[in-house]
Image (cartoon, rainbow, N blue to C red; front, side):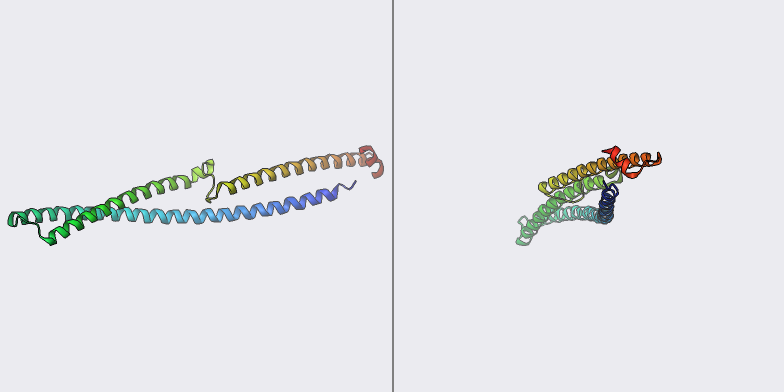
Length: 190
């Protein structure tokens, strides 16, 4: 029985598998770095948007106060609302509804960015709290899990074969060291 050939084949398989895993690791590390940069860019944009919303809200408050003062002053002079004033108030109502909608969007974005930032923190990645950086359908995630389980099973089988081969090689080398011929040593193994 030639023991070296299966060991060499297993070695080739393990080396190619190791190369594939290294390539996958390098790709995922590069993807993680790219996503981290995108997250930082998203944080900066989010902060600038929040600042702008605060400025817009402050300006809207000032405009509302001014328009209220102008309206109060004009009512004392003219008891009726003109068409221009009616249009102006409609515009104010439209602006208010738009601002309320933006406020909801900003709150939603803030929640999303906070949860995303927490999920992307280095501690979460090391602790295994982050499962996957790619949004995959459930079916594909199941396929990935099945593939990983299958690979684990194959690796266990190969590990068992390697152990058996090591035992056989050790027995042959012990027999050879006692001065037995290779054929006699093989017969003892059978």
